[in-house]
Image 1 (tube, rainbow, N blue to C red):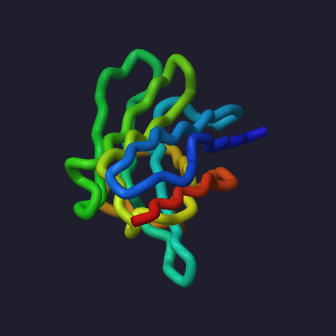
Image 2 (tube, rainbow, N blue to C red):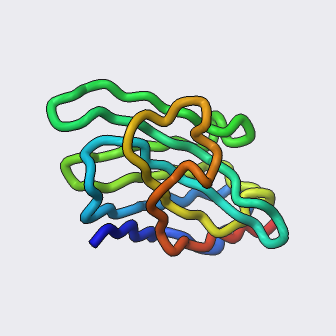
Image 3 (spheres, rainbow, N blue to C red):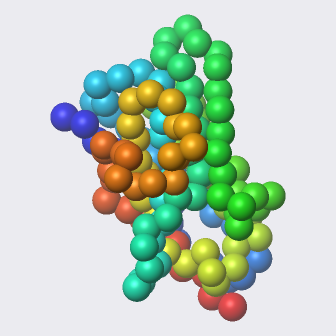
Length: 131
């Protein structure tokens, strides 16, 4: 059974840091496009960052990241552990949202930020940043 399980969400003060993790299991593909989306109350779900890696034996990696989080957030992936990470630094209240892990086969491409393009989703982990 395909599963994405997020963890690491918490409540922090502005300027703080968090690291989110997403453990993937049962996905019917290796590599592929995995990433993070977020959704704040009353707002649409938006792409935060995604990373593509090739299948077994491939060293190719490509990353896309939202402009508003560049320089503050870093996405990484450990294929040996089937785990995706999002390191978030210098958090501000605008980062408050439910953060979701998402996955799809193939490259991320320019459509990386469109939620409908992703096949698998986690249940989300809440990040709350207070001023």
